[in-house]
Length: 280
Length: 306
Image (cartoon, rainbow over all chains, first blue to last red; front, side, top):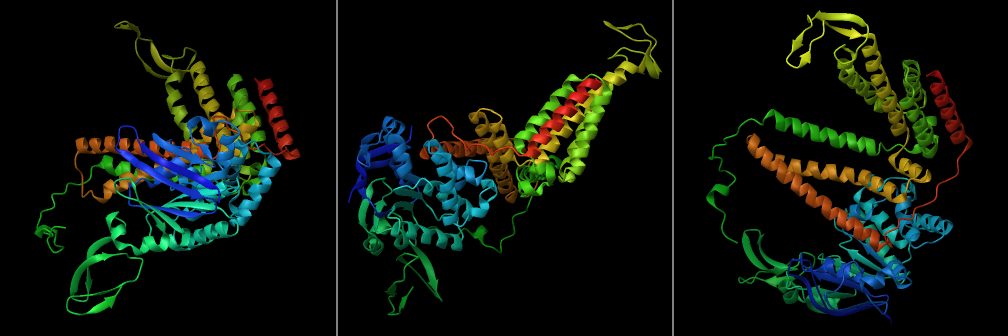
């Protein structure tokens, strides 16, 4: 399978701050579902920004679709527009992503910048709105929409470009359970039937089995702590504890108070000193 | 984790609450901010589609901008009162019979001219505008007061009254026309209309984004204020309030900058390279043409009247 992204020893720091990412080396193949897992501030969003050619590596080498990502490369045709078409970035904050006066213009923005014909753009806009079941929002201003609707419109504004890879930054954050379910089903559909490569940054362990087959875990030292299949990553309590993704905290069982490391999202059994075994 | 200190127990209410009453200014800020958020939300989008804004709402935004802007320019050229009064009447007629929500515009159409009239009152006196006295208010006796000459009497002059009335009528006409345009056109259509009339896309985009993010900015301001309010037990004095206001403004600036940077990134991510490309506009209907023709004829009539 072709490589979509190839990172070799990549480091990045915001001006005047400590590095947000240190010597990251990994690759993403076409059609893969990768999750970037890490505690808050571990560098997940930074990594997505680097993948989308919004930030550039200060050391190391980032390649996308075989081409080195540099400020010059992402601006110059033919690679620049092609890269923007192929890689779609769903921001965590939908309000930042939706900046046009209407939903229709929001969807048309990307294709218009690519210089596509207007008839084709309008056809694709209609199809994409239909696919996501938001045709009734076409003429509405994005600021008046609910969080779930905004997320759908933001996703539609990427899908209209028919991308090869979707970079998703905490896609379910702030969504109600129904909207979360809808989004996960849609992403599953896009991957299963559309063959889309999905890269999702999250710290939500519950989400992992639904969105990724492979997990890249970032430690609090901003280095890649592990690169594992999802099942193995979720089963490695020691690893998850060391990167601050699970925790040990005190809790009660009737009158008994005790503490041990656990995930809130997975069931487990354990024994107490007095021989009282139970499961969570 | 350390153990809870004694005073943190829920039963502890021993600490005296030395609460002062919130000052009037603080309460006014609270009410004012809530009001502004509400008004802005209503102005930005009242939820009505274009087709449900009466016949005037169905006229293309380009036609409305062109026609009403033409009349607005004419009001700055005419010098007599009759055409200005006629223009105000026409704007009210459009508001009443155009099918738009009159309650949304009535306040602006009444309050702004009244305020302008109050500002223009001094211009009607002979000390500002010379002319034949119509109403004598008092005798001042003439002479000099320091370097200034004191007139014989303080009176409302015919010329002064005319100047004040023309100023008030002109502003009434302009505000009424702008109100009718705003109430009958959704912001998103207005921006499309401006683009369709050849206003550079970059300007329209900036204006559209300002409108788009005004709502977000006001909500952030409200959030900051409510967060402070939820931990306020009473007044803390004006100096403290000022410190808080400055800190709030700083935080608001930081948040707006963060959003602005994210917006720029989102634009670049979807292919923006410095030049904005937007959708073309639809064709004009007979209704749009008739509206513009009517406005042109009306404007020409006003000009002929004076």
